Amino acid sequence: MSTENLPQSPEQPTRKPRVAVVFGGRSSEHGISTVTAGAVLKAIDRTKYDVLPIGITREGRWVLTADEPERMAITERRTPDVDDLAESHEGGVVLPTDPGSREVVYSEPGSVPKALGEVDVVFPVLHGPYGEDGTLQGLLELSGVPYVGSGVLASAVGQDKEYMKRVFTSFGLKVGPYVVIRPREWERDTSAARKKIIDFAGDHGWPLFVKPARAGSSIGITKVDDLSGLDEAIEEARRHDPKVLVEAALRGREIECGVLEFEDGPRASVPAEIPPPQAHAYYDFEAKYIDSTPGVVPAPLTEEQTAEVQRLAVEAFEAASCEGLVRADFFLTEDGEFVINEINTMPGFTPISMYPQMWQASGISYPELVDRLVQAALRRPTGLR
Image (cartoon, rainbow, N blue to C red; front, side, top):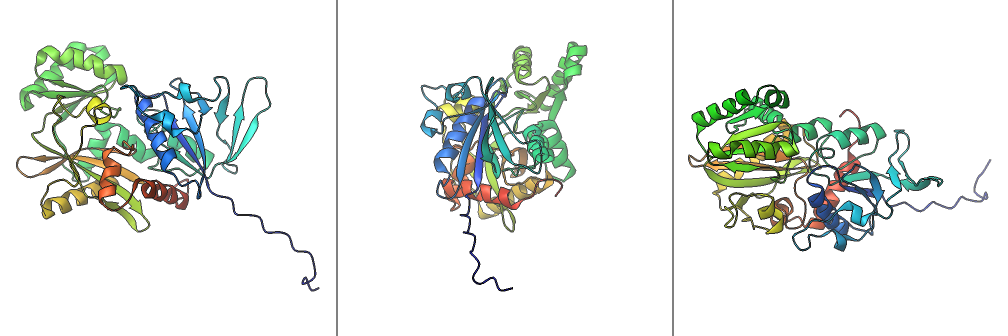
């Protein structure tokens, strides 16, 4: 039978992909994550994507927040807080638990849960534990929702500086001297754990950098010049993470390089150099975000040095099985060798952060960078890959 004269169903309009920007979180980097979310919300192309801002409070509650990027900035040297942006202090957001559905639900006590529609991709701009470390990525894998950035394993490796260094070493990348104090070591025999660090200092000299093994944004890090400051530095690190990493100081220049996933694989940006900050002992949280110590982009390196650090940055990306984006941090030592310090699988991502600046200098603007990351996530399936 001919269907020429039958009434035709009207074509359904194509729906824009819906991006949930998830930020805040339970780590000590809650504030800078919120600043990053403001920058992403401001930059994302609203003609191309629908956007749903979801904040996670310091206590771990998922909330709807105002879509007002201007309220997510650092003001009077204070970072913003999700609680101040939440539309309700009682309601909560729930992600789907069925991989066959991407419907996000909002519920309040005593009210019927309200469907907020499907989410096509999550852009998690969380830093530190409970977000950047594979925990959120595992939740999204269970939910079957695509997301920006690395998967569970790479996120966990990128967060735990001890295992990050072990992975890099196994792939032939050079790392600096370090020693780890695990929670049970410190709690079982504090004197023996302290002696382990003192012996390490005897081998490698002072100063030492004492830091939480699984934190970022230079939070909880102390530069220790001699034995007198060691216990206080350990306690400061343990406030953020019971596992402590102690690193020998490396003499050299701090060089960073961005890696971004393109359709044909990862590519490296032009590198940047972080000069020693004038008002700070090292490149700490305040130097990065409060006083905005400027980096030098591109770094004043030879063509050979630039090519080498770009090669090593991509090698680090591949070694840890990363996806989406990475910032790789190196020391260029006095003998001309690049030593990798760490990678960040969700690096500082405000417009003044080094990762976007390096890509800006490489010809990719901040809004284009956001778009490329979302598109890479939409192309990539969840599950084993």
